[in-house]
Length: 461
Image 1 (cartoon, one colour):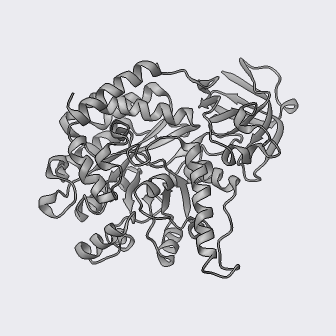
Image 2: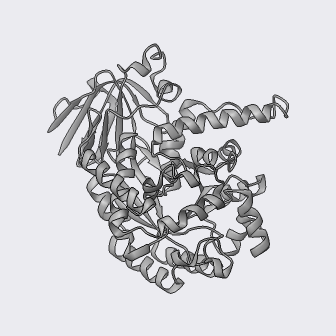
Image 3: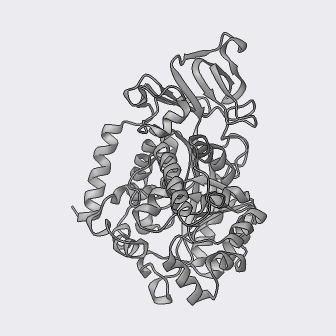
């Protein structure tokens, strides 16, 4: 099966040379890119030809941290104005009522929103499994939507009675967590290039799992060659918890439980110092930067400039849809750019001009959302448009009101102007969004079912 995409106003490759090709196109065979270049340099026939005159093409965006199930509890009044720990304590009892069908529906809702925003690969962190729910429910829902999925088998084993934050009703035994983690890897994990599904082991956070579960999860992941993920250094409350309970700051605690290496990435990392950043870079740990969630919960501003300057792998995450409260990855790239500029301004007020960070550019923010995310997830087959990579691409029609007067630099316009949904999205050569419409699921029916599930969950009716 061959596909020719041609006549794009601009193709943004994110390849090693960071080529931006005018009047560009892409030739695809069986889900993989064979050629990228000017349209007149490509084969002129294919099984399918897509004319993208007036469009800008980018690599599909990569989301490195999310909680799909939280679409069911967006903007819950009691959790609107709370910091992380109080936000969690408000929502844990509501999440404890979720069913397998709730997991399936919320997965499709979150992935539909992500797909329309330009995401082609998403990592999700599901860490509580009430009423018979399993990660399998998420995997089944995702398969119908058609995005690449890194499904994290999250877990919580440290309940309130043992000094943890979550209520005992939403924690599991370590034996059952590890047994199910092994089952999921054996059943679903695909490590081959072009993989549509990979399993990740992801104990939730230092304040909701034991050190022993962290160690056992790391050993199991390395036995099977899968990645590890958790929340880390998100808030000052967490730092104080770790110092009191473990005698370490969060990053040092991760070292003590064998959680550093190329196969590890952490969500947030707001409260890390320069030596800890250098440890990330030296050992290969990645970071999922979640600017909207950090702002929503008043957690702080992650030191992204210091991380990228030091060589840390950094990607973007929309985070949970009850702490964002959306799943728009292009908007998250814009937020990352703006928040980095705010931090640069704040630091510039107290430092010399030489010491202040430079302003993050639109291209740098989009690199976090593509190449950065791919590196964080350990994927070498996505993140750029070049021969041998997966045919994951997105396109925006530049003839929209939002871009009027901004076409001096179409790529920068995607972030400086109001973020839009994509006009076209392709995942491994399969068109998932066409003319701005999601092709794989019926959104009207999905929204209706999702709202019914949300009302039942939050209000019991």
